[in-house]
Amino acid sequence: MKQAVTHQAEYGHGDTTYQAAGGQVGIRKLVDCFFDFMANDAKYSVIYDWHPQDKEVSRDKLALFLCGWMGGPRPFVEKYGQIRIPQAHRHLTITAVERDLWLDCMSRALNVQDYPPDLVKYLQQQLYIPAERVRKVCMGE
Ligand code: HEM
Image 1: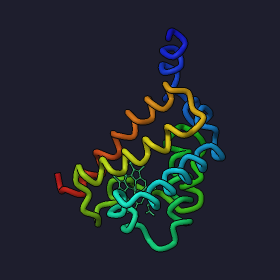
Image 2: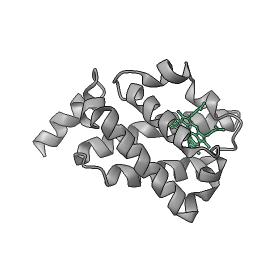
Image 3: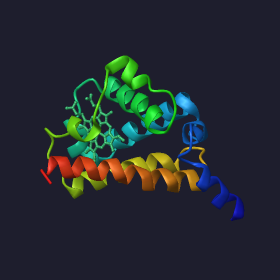
Image 4: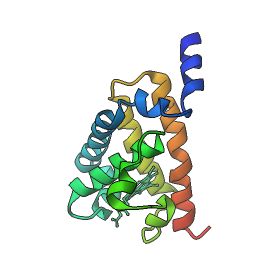
């Protein structure tokens, strides 16, 4: 218990989150699981079908973006250029329902990684922040 608290306090500083998530290899694995769950469970079909046909590009984009988002290097910017996450979604109708589908799918992917429970909890909490920003921009709030 004491150790879990100590770890959680470290995430978010420097590249500790990125390293704990397994660097680019670990994050790609996470994103592959996320997209596999989204593709194979009909409850996510609304958000899955919004993605462009080439899901390999979508997987690559999310994985590379999350590297920088977790405090690691920023391969997304190098490969695809600057991005503002909320604005990149503004053409979509993301309400609380679609936001929660995305977060639920990501939670499932996080839970099957070989991650310590406090990292899973930390990432679930932190991902809510950009997901909610996305919803707000989509809803014009
Ligand atoms: C709130 C729920 C979310 C939904 C339903 C959602 C869904 C989508 C969809 C459908 C696309 C493809 C858009 C297109 O090419 O037309 C996309 C792109 C993307 N999403 Fe999300 N997303 C959500 C939240 C997030 C969050 C929280 C992040 C990052 C932490 C993220 C990162 C990305 C990235 C990096 C792209 C590629 C953007 C681009 O190519 O310009 N998304 N998302």
